[in-house]
Image (tube, rainbow, N blue to C red):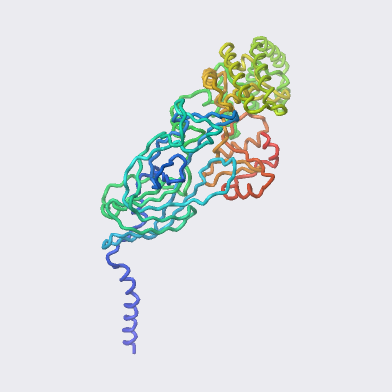
Length: 582
């Protein structure tokens, strides 16, 4: 009986192992894994899928989908395209461009040498939330990932202007000539598949896919979706030439994210190159360092940055003096605080400015009596050297501008354009004759005795010229550039230059949000938090952020939008009705 049991056990074991043996030796199939695909990945962060009808600057008569190497795309205005409103309404063309990343996970891949067929299964993860500020929320359309398996054909793909504006209201020119949607701006290397296996899946978090097809030594498999870098693998090399030298593997991304390419019409790569070239120390190097120390509450170190700035530059902007005084006080260095304060007298800031609470320790100090007497004398002397004619003519121009722009009597767009064109001509003539109205020539601006304004009221004249795109705008910009280089005009920190678009940070109902596709940046978050916890009245740059207006008609719509697209970072303030008015 015992012998029979052993024989039966052996038979059962053999029967159980039959399916396994058949699977392992299934007609000579070859299996491949994630590592094989990763080592045969083609051109990371290079190709972009241009699918007919999905891409506004790739309009063409054929219906072929192209994988395009458009890394050298410059941005529309950088090709020399200009826009001008025909109906005199404000119009600014602002282009932002970002690309997100797809992530392809291979679960199984089997290749049958007998019929040269390959079957690939796995998951694709991705998103199309690429970080542009949506000023108007529209219903989100479902995006897809398109999968192609076949032999590629190289070609050249044209980048067209496309139908980006309403030609009835906006004039579009290139080299001073009218152009249409099919004007070619640039051409890029590209490829497409003539004969291929095809599959389409939803663009989502870890969506399954499966694709099968014939394979040759030239076969690629490509995954592409609008606003996403394509994931492309050389299957021919993986199967027929496994010892081929592979391209250097790119750094692995933990999760799919996005990469900004163009911001406010400027190439991010150009901005980075400029920053690299600006390795030399300049005025704004010290102010940026000082403000970073202020954000960290390291006032003594900020004070030293301002002291160095003072040694390097004979004339400073009032906002930096304003901050330097506070850093000295908070560092308990009243001697330095008194020294800095005298510099404000040269800007025409009167003694009531020092009634603010931050100056309590200075007013109680025995040195205050001598300081206040000397201060009044310096302040009166500086005002005696002001260019009063320049001040008067600026005020006249401001009155002429506001006569038509005022909220109570705002004129129609055509009149506003004509007013701005006329006022800008006069402003240009004034700048050529008298020079830029710097703080040394015309003083700086204080409201309610103690609040220093970063920029004067006449800045609105430059803002309107920029908004209206007046014919004389280039001449004005040239003059302002000269004044900026001479540190008379603080153009780098002028709000006229800050559009506020395309920020990953949004503030809505007192809450700070960040786009889900962006990594958390604690330094930037500290700066934004400081904006709402700045008891000492520092004048700071808080970087780019968007304040979302409350949707009184349909609050749930906006709440749902933020729930879907943003992560909540923190509550900044309950007084959100106040900052919406900023």
